Length: 207
Image 1 (cartoon, one colour):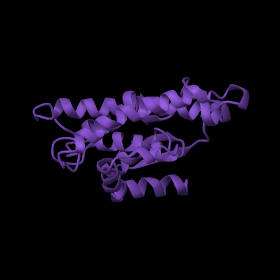
Image 2 (cartoon, one colour; image 1 turned 90 degrees about the vertical axis):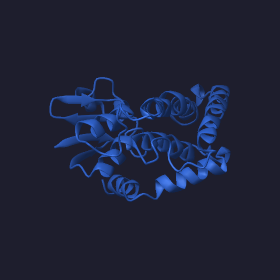
Image 3 (tube, one colour; image 1 turned 180 degrees about the vertical axis):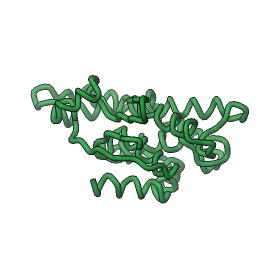
Image 4 (cartoon, one colour; image 1 turned 180 degrees about the horizontal axis):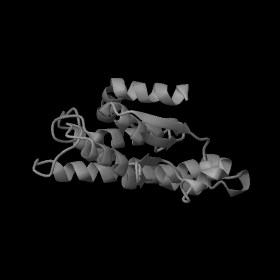
């Protein structure tokens, strides 16, 4: 059975949501955040000390946007993946990677320097600068949705939408959703009312 190491509403939520969308059986291991500090024995499983960690037989993965892609291709075929012969394949890959490298990364800096560092190491300037970085990159999501499309690529809900919607979940947790455009707010509403999103949220709450 697939195993997922997860912290509440952390990047690993991408993997949890993807598992629910695909209806795959899994075992969920909940950890306190940050696990490398609060659960040091976890380093035996993942020396990086980061989450997610997905274990599937001999496969071990730690990149939150790669895991949904892996699940869709390894356990497909599924409409959640965009295949190389589809016109939007490149766009699909772009959003998968943009969701983490462009949208989530600056938020993790904000999270670190406003919440997780001790008071003497909190850096308001760094948090403010990376907040503006996130807001400037968020504009591209608005542009992508301005043509009225429901989802980001291929005319259907895909793993790219899961990975991008997670960045919005993190923004909400950080109180940055006041910059959501109407297009982004509507996209979030569609994504966060999907049965699999609700099931993933219920699974982490129950665990």
